[in-house]
Amino acid sequence: MIAETARPHCDLKPQSRPVLRPDLSPRRERLIRMLRLKWVNGTVLHYWFLEGPGPQKDAVRNAFQEWKDLGIGLEFAQVADRSEAEVRIAFDQADGSWSYVGRDILSISATEPTMNFGWDLTDDYGRTTALHEIGHTLGMPHEHQNPFAGIVWDEPKVYEYFGGAPNHWPPDQTLHNVLRKIDASEVEGSSWDPDSVMEYWFPAGLIKEPARFQAGLNPPGGLSDADKEWVLKFFPPLAPLVPRLKPFQSVPLSLAPGGQADFSLQLEASREYEIATFGTADTVLVLFEEVDGELRFVAGDDDSGEARNSRISAKLFQGRHYVARVRLYWAGESGQTAIMCW
Image 1 (cartoon, rainbow, N blue to C red):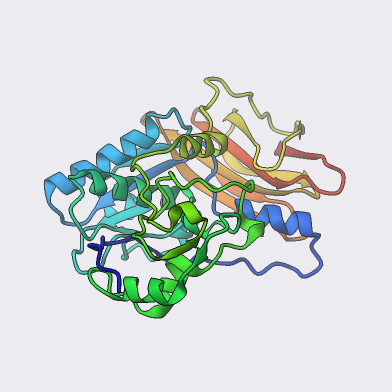
Image 2 (image 1 turned 120 degrees about the horizontal axis):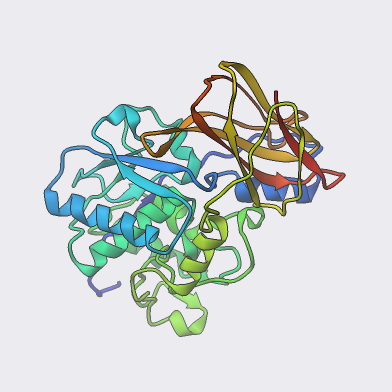
């Protein structure tokens, strides 16, 4: 038996898995699986609170700000209307703490929360919990499920520990949140960060290997250096000025996998416009409109793994300011792609 006092652990909602054509090259498939849940940099994630105590809400606001203070290109904005929020946050004390991962939240009904906090967030462990769940929303998985971690579990003891108080997880939940390894095709790099905010705390007796964690794994809490490096790699600070995309002028794109290009659209006529990429590349294309100084989502398209190009059709208006963002999965057989508006 494990006698050490147990801690409540965060849950992870099941992630969607894309149905990809069987004829995709291994590299193309790997890039799609690795990048598919990542937001286009420059996205404003709007969050909304269900009823909850003021100190709990303040803790979540502070955690969003801590991520933002790293200088990342994403923005976070609290809204008063559920219908305007991509991130909907509940404080159900009977439901544990959990979140969906990355762009998976867009597939959740607008009437349902995408994140929940089931215990006090005002102490150090609570602060780390808030950072952890927001990390999931940014697209980060559990670090202990990294296939390169080399963890060998004492599986009967793991099931016993998480099946007991305060978690009371059934075996399939323990498998999903702890023992299941993430597919190597979905992992960037090959290192494991035991200090990550996405790493669980584990008591002694659950880990057989690496030997140094047989006495337990106790991350320091907060964001590790590797967490900061990861989030700045995917969401670097945005350039203050972006080039203009003019109608009927094709712009070649030279991007590495995960790279992004941004364009400003200032149009001289109000009408229906088409914005599309060209070539054999896999991309995510998103269009925003500036409203009261904030970029608001207009339309988006993801052509990854398909025999077509990402394409947006929308009525755009003279005198308004729009921004188009393109994030690359795979550069195609030619290694070249382009974007055009007409």
